Amino acid sequence: MNYSYLLPNWFFGFSIGMELLFGIVTLLVAMFAFRIFSVTKERKTRLFGTSFLLIGLSYIIWAGINFWFSYIDPEGLREITIEGLALIGVTSLYAYMILFISGLVTLAYIACDVKKGKVYYMLMGLSLLVIAASFYKLISFRILSVFLIAVIAYHYLEEYLNNKNRKTFLVLLAFILLFLSSLVFAFSSAYYMAYVIGHILELAAYMLILINLIKSVKK
Image 1 (cartoon, rainbow, N blue to C red):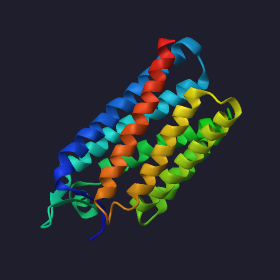
Image 2 (tube, helix red, strand yellow):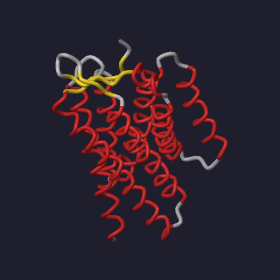
Image 3 (cartoon, rainbow, N blue to C red):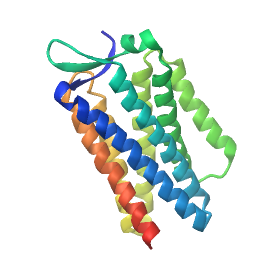
Image 4 (cartoon, rainbow, N blue to C red):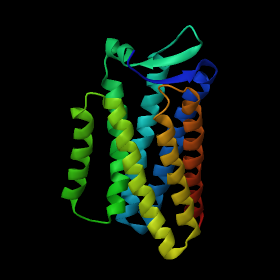
């Protein structure tokens, strides 16, 4: 069966709760970023907030997908299936992938440190085209996510090496955790604990980013 990932039944409720929490935390990150932008008027801060707004919305949709389109197999595992999604429609799945990738592309665009809008639209168009043209869309989505997060993490690594700033280091650490999480999710179709580990790594990453922004607002 062409499924996207497995998760243990005991983790099912927790996973939906964590995905909703990811949505809330990333939306809070967006809110604090926009709050900083209202004071500094820095373009990068506005784009940072926009990226996390898109990612936050994607997690809320992901939680909905897991809640509505899963079933328990005889071994007590939840299996999220492409077939199950196709029976009702794949709109929500596409919305999740488009929003999440759009958020990552926006962050990668910040990392490129360019101000030309056509570069942003080119990155966005090519990224979405990769998914749209792929026969195995979820696999392409995961590979593209790993690539974009790697680009973003490398950008913050360069920034940290240049200025040795503690805040930059926390953001770098967060994206390293997200990178590891994306790699772990690649095994979630065959190994159910990968789904659990991936969620834990994501939670740690987003909490680091949120704490970092809260400290910036307080100052």
